[in-house]
Length: 116
Image 1 (cartoon, rainbow, N blue to C red):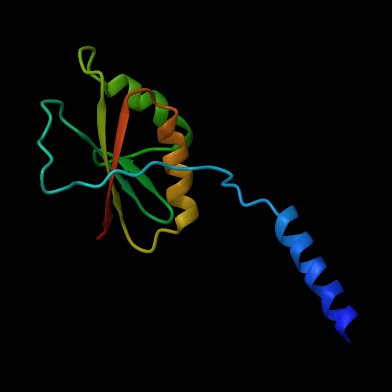
Image 2: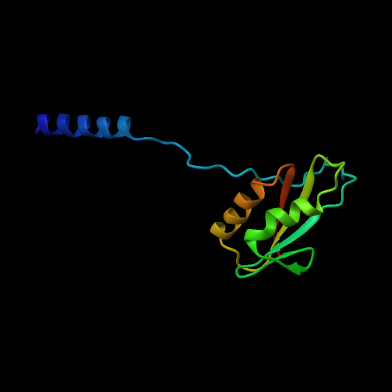
């Protein structure tokens, strides 16, 4: 019985040490804080619902979003503030897909507002 416990302990130790605990991807999130000051650049407003996406009130497709954001970015501004409002029961996967697309836009500073 003692040798069986030793073997189980060794197997447990082996599997714990051979496992990897890495993160596959990270998505940066920004939240509006109490001490934040507004920028001179006017933010873009994205509304994300479970089935639709709109940019400043106009329906858009997720694949064409990076080009539209680059077109709306002022020449002088280094950062592009983007506000994302979640509408309804948006899944975490849908939000992650949107944030992955927004990550490809240079200078985009994304703030997730929350569900309405």
